[in-house]
Length: 68
Image 1 (cartoon, rainbow, N blue to C red):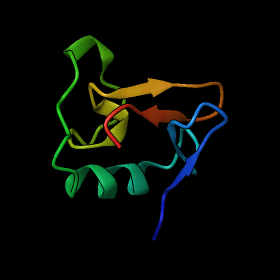
Image 2 (cartoon, rainbow, N blue to C red):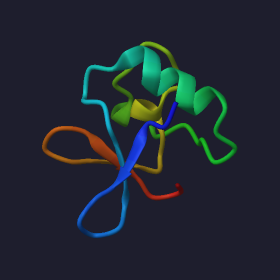
Image 3 (tube, rainbow, N blue to C red):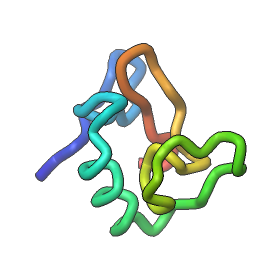
């Protein structure tokens, strides 16, 4: 399944939202670029999650990945 779209700036934006916990964990589990963010930036219980990745940048509704 393709979880990404290119936004108006050409960045890889997650198709889901800020509450798609399972999908974000699935993506991060197979991502060679995943790097755990600083402890105070962690938001998901599942440590390996895009929501907890250092390369995640929040948007109003979702996030972009600066490594995709």
